[in-house]
Length: 311
Image 1 (cartoon, rainbow, N blue to C red):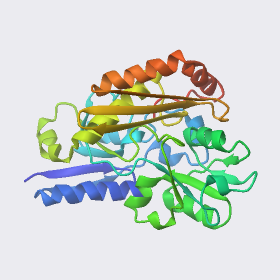
Image 2: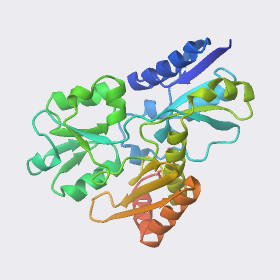
Image 3: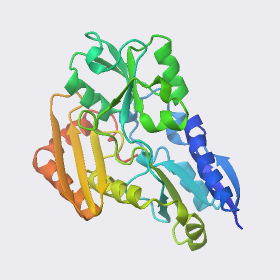
Image 4: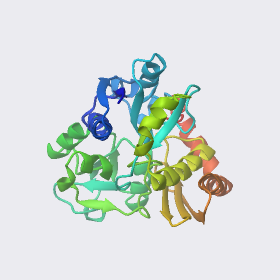
């Protein structure tokens, strides 16, 4: 059996993910070590994600450790991984997907419709902000950074009337009891890849690829490949208001996608079905571009000090 070294960010959720993969590998008889690596995104906590503008801000330092042979594989939240990996790396596995939806959390209010006028809602995501403002233009959207515990603590202290988080992270940490409302994808389209883990290795490392092949989930790979093809066509990342949600049924794939102005005044939605994940993602991207998505994204890029590229 092999000795495998995992590179991971140091947040509570990232370590849960790394330990989850470690446990699965150990069940197959491997010896596993985890190395915690601090990324650019972890170091910058006082700036909204949409204004950071650093490509690979949650992955670059981990990839450097991979390249230097300090670790053998990296465990990422797939939504943090650029659609085009740098030369020298490959996406060897995409794990079985957890719930991709966003959730509404509040101490007093069951769902967004119940919030009082001008309520303060915390999120660091332009995608969430845009779709929430489309539902409730009156709401005050306030930037919310930090790990899951930090965000929940700010909610409990009364700093916010509500916050929006990913269902997957809460469920993985056993915190689903605090979820008030799981937002349907037709109200808030999730981020591409949300809920799935991506396992990155050095390109051409056939030994490690073979050892971790059992972690790959075919449906998750198909759905997220479709979502990431849409994201690549639009040239966006998790810092811009793009949502993508693919569902597989038999051999068919249905992709729903959203591009929206951050203030929620214009939301473009497109849904198509097909059997080829890459072709479907690209086709939905083309349809959104034809309907005006490029202008929306150019406005977003132009409004920030740095162009927010793929994360």
